[in-house]
Image (tube, rainbow, N blue to C red; front, side, top):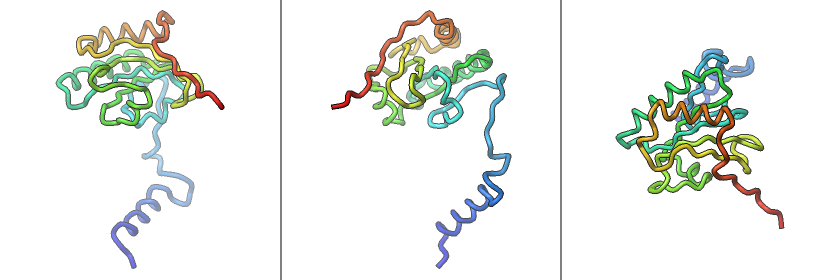
Amino acid sequence: MWSFDSGWCAWLTLFLCPASGGPPAQFLRSRSATESRFFEYPDVDLTEDLPHFMLVMDDEASYYNDAYSALREVASELASERLAFVVLKTSFTSSLKFFKFQLGKDVPMALTIKWSNGYGIRPFHMFLHSKGSVSDLGRDLLLRAARKFLSGELQPWIRSAPILEE
Protein backbone atom coordinates (compact mmCIF):
# COMPACT_ATOMS: atom_id res chain seq x y z
CA MET A 1 0.00 0.00 0.00
CA TRP A 2 1.23 3.44 -0.90
CA SER A 3 1.75 5.86 1.95
CA PHE A 4 2.71 9.52 1.91
CA ASP A 5 6.07 8.81 3.51
CA SER A 6 7.21 5.96 1.27
CA GLY A 7 5.69 7.32 -1.93
CA TRP A 8 6.98 10.83 -1.40
CA CYS A 9 10.49 9.67 -0.54
CA ALA A 10 10.63 7.39 -3.57
CA TRP A 11 9.48 10.16 -5.90
CA LEU A 12 11.94 12.64 -4.39
CA THR A 13 14.80 10.14 -4.73
CA LEU A 14 13.98 9.57 -8.40
CA PHE A 15 13.74 13.31 -9.01
CA LEU A 16 16.98 14.20 -7.24
CA CYS A 17 19.03 11.20 -8.37
CA PRO A 18 17.82 10.10 -11.78
CA ALA A 19 19.12 6.94 -13.40
CA SER A 20 21.51 9.10 -15.45
CA GLY A 21 23.82 9.16 -12.43
CA GLY A 22 23.41 11.78 -9.77
CA PRO A 23 21.48 14.89 -8.90
CA PRO A 24 20.62 17.54 -11.48
CA ALA A 25 23.24 20.26 -12.05
CA GLN A 26 21.26 22.89 -10.10
CA PHE A 27 21.75 20.81 -6.93
CA LEU A 28 25.51 20.40 -7.24
CA ARG A 29 27.73 22.72 -5.25
CA SER A 30 31.04 24.04 -6.46
CA ARG A 31 33.15 26.97 -5.46
CA SER A 32 35.71 28.88 -7.46
CA ALA A 33 39.01 30.10 -6.00
CA THR A 34 37.63 33.63 -5.78
CA GLU A 35 34.34 32.70 -4.11
CA SER A 36 34.08 33.11 -0.35
CA ARG A 37 34.81 29.98 1.67
CA PHE A 38 32.13 30.66 4.29
CA PHE A 39 30.24 27.69 5.73
CA GLU A 40 27.84 26.79 8.50
CA TYR A 41 28.43 23.48 10.24
CA PRO A 42 27.43 20.76 9.36
CA ASP A 43 27.53 21.90 5.71
CA VAL A 44 31.33 21.74 5.46
CA ASP A 45 31.72 18.97 2.89
CA LEU A 46 33.78 21.15 0.54
CA THR A 47 36.31 22.08 3.23
CA GLU A 48 37.94 18.77 4.05
CA ASP A 49 41.39 19.70 2.79
CA LEU A 50 41.43 23.18 4.36
CA PRO A 51 42.16 24.47 7.86
CA HIS A 52 38.98 25.81 9.53
CA PHE A 53 38.81 29.29 10.99
CA MET A 54 35.86 28.68 13.27
CA LEU A 55 33.49 30.75 15.37
CA VAL A 56 31.71 28.72 18.03
CA MET A 57 28.62 30.68 19.03
CA ASP A 58 25.20 30.46 20.58
CA ASP A 59 22.83 31.37 17.75
CA GLU A 60 20.35 32.83 20.26
CA ALA A 61 22.89 35.20 21.83
CA SER A 62 22.70 38.94 21.19
CA TYR A 63 26.15 39.02 19.56
CA TYR A 64 25.41 36.25 17.05
CA ASN A 65 24.26 38.29 14.03
CA ASP A 66 27.11 40.82 14.30
CA ALA A 67 29.79 38.13 14.69
CA TYR A 68 28.25 36.07 11.87
CA SER A 69 28.36 39.08 9.54
CA ALA A 70 31.92 39.91 10.59
CA LEU A 71 33.11 36.39 9.80
CA ARG A 72 31.34 36.47 6.43
CA GLU A 73 33.16 39.74 5.59
CA VAL A 74 36.52 38.25 6.58
CA ALA A 75 35.81 35.17 4.47
CA SER A 76 35.06 37.38 1.48
CA GLU A 77 38.21 39.42 1.97
CA LEU A 78 40.39 36.31 2.27
CA ALA A 79 38.58 34.28 -0.40
CA SER A 80 41.82 33.54 -2.26
CA GLU A 81 43.48 32.01 0.81
CA ARG A 82 43.44 28.30 1.65
CA LEU A 83 41.23 28.71 4.70
CA ALA A 84 37.60 27.77 5.34
CA PHE A 85 35.51 30.03 7.57
CA VAL A 86 33.01 28.01 9.59
CA VAL A 87 30.24 28.92 12.03
CA LEU A 88 29.59 26.21 14.61
CA LYS A 89 26.41 26.73 16.62
CA THR A 90 26.26 25.49 20.18
CA SER A 91 23.18 23.43 19.31
CA PHE A 92 25.58 20.87 17.75
CA THR A 93 26.52 19.44 21.13
CA SER A 94 28.29 16.38 19.72
CA SER A 95 30.76 18.68 17.96
CA LEU A 96 31.35 20.62 21.15
CA LYS A 97 32.08 17.33 22.90
CA PHE A 98 34.45 16.27 20.10
CA PHE A 99 36.51 19.43 20.68
CA LYS A 100 35.97 19.29 24.47
CA PHE A 101 34.48 22.80 24.60
CA GLN A 102 32.43 23.91 27.59
CA LEU A 103 29.36 26.06 26.95
CA GLY A 104 29.54 28.41 29.91
CA LYS A 105 33.30 28.74 29.95
CA ASP A 106 34.59 28.69 26.36
CA VAL A 107 31.80 30.12 24.20
CA PRO A 108 31.91 32.38 22.25
CA MET A 109 35.17 31.21 20.78
CA ALA A 110 37.28 31.95 17.72
CA LEU A 111 39.91 29.41 16.72
CA THR A 112 41.60 27.79 13.77
CA ILE A 113 41.81 24.03 13.37
CA LYS A 114 44.47 22.48 11.20
CA TRP A 115 43.50 18.91 10.41
CA SER A 116 46.67 16.80 10.48
CA ASN A 117 45.15 13.49 9.37
CA GLY A 118 42.03 14.64 7.56
CA TYR A 119 38.81 16.38 8.50
CA GLY A 120 37.31 15.23 11.79
CA ILE A 121 40.21 12.91 12.68
CA ARG A 122 42.49 13.25 15.66
CA PRO A 123 45.18 14.40 16.18
CA PHE A 124 44.68 17.96 14.99
CA HIS A 125 46.15 21.34 15.88
CA MET A 126 44.11 24.17 17.39
CA PHE A 127 45.10 27.82 17.35
CA LEU A 128 43.08 29.91 19.81
CA HIS A 129 42.19 33.49 18.87
CA SER A 130 39.52 34.31 21.44
CA LYS A 131 37.68 32.47 24.21
CA GLY A 132 34.67 33.62 26.21
CA SER A 133 34.85 37.22 25.00
CA VAL A 134 32.30 38.89 22.75
CA SER A 135 34.55 41.93 22.22
CA ASP A 136 37.04 39.82 20.22
CA LEU A 137 34.50 38.88 17.54
CA GLY A 138 34.68 42.08 15.46
CA ARG A 139 35.67 42.08 11.81
CA ASP A 140 39.10 43.68 12.29
CA LEU A 141 40.12 41.36 15.12
CA LEU A 142 38.93 38.27 13.22
CA LEU A 143 40.79 39.41 10.10
CA ARG A 144 43.97 40.00 12.09
CA ALA A 145 43.69 36.55 13.70
CA ALA A 146 43.17 34.83 10.34
CA ARG A 147 46.17 36.63 8.84
CA LYS A 148 48.35 35.65 11.81
CA PHE A 149 47.40 32.02 11.30
CA LEU A 150 48.06 32.20 7.55
CA SER A 151 51.47 33.79 8.09
CA GLY A 152 52.47 31.10 10.60
CA GLU A 153 52.81 33.49 13.55
CA LEU A 154 50.66 31.41 15.92
CA GLN A 155 51.67 28.49 18.10
CA PRO A 156 49.22 25.61 18.59
CA TRP A 157 46.95 26.03 21.60
CA ILE A 158 45.82 22.43 22.04
CA ARG A 159 46.84 19.36 20.16
CA SER A 160 44.67 16.36 20.69
CA ALA A 161 46.53 13.22 21.62
CA PRO A 162 46.26 10.11 19.49
CA ILE A 163 44.45 7.18 21.02
CA LEU A 164 46.97 4.74 22.49
CA GLU A 165 46.69 1.13 21.52
CA GLU A 166 46.75 -1.44 24.30
